[in-house]
Structures are given as C-alpha cells and as structure tokens.
Length: 109
Image 1: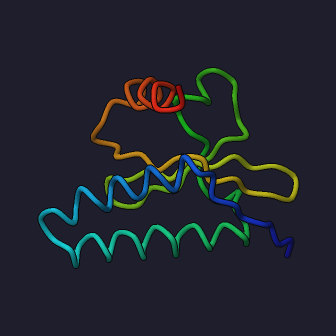
Image 2: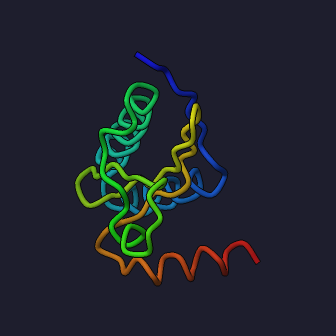
Image 3: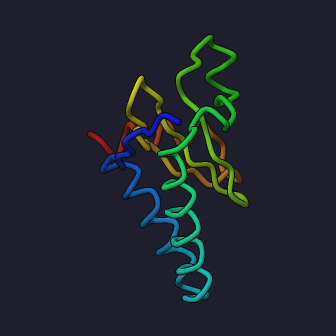
C-alpha cells in the first residue's frame, strides 16, 4: 500500500486553533477532544487518502483533487497530489462555505 506524506498548512493550523479556542471558552475537555480527534483523523491520511469524498462545492466546478474528512460538524479539506497530502483548511460546516473562503482571503491580506 502506498504511503503519503501529510503536511498541515499554516492556514489549516490557524483554522483548527480558532475552533479549539472557541470551544475551550465553554468546555476545555471538549476542545481537547476535538483537537485530538481531528489530528488523529488527519494522520490517517498517510494511508489511502482517496477513501474520503471530493469536496462537493469544488466538484461542481470540476475540481477533483480536493477532498475532505468530515468529523462531527467539522470539515478537514485537503489537497491530494501524487505523493503528498496538504491539509489546507478546517471548516465548521455550520458556517457558509463561501463566507469561510472570503474570510480566509481577507485573513491573508
């Protein structure tokens, strides 16, 4: 079985930290649990990352090399290349995806 390298982008790390920070305001144990679960799920991408679905919003545009893991209300979006998985975003699915992308662009500028 082919093994991939998995890398977290700085933006994805910020996304996860923001989510965990928000949760920790009410329940620290829940925040730690979400953090550990998301990180563990992402570690599994080293083996068979194709098993997860293509991001539906991007599939509509014909873009098929971005996939996602869904964990509870969270979506971990990653780009799949021939040998590397780039984790590019952690999104709360209760938020509008377009708004998330817009805010991501603003955060970069």
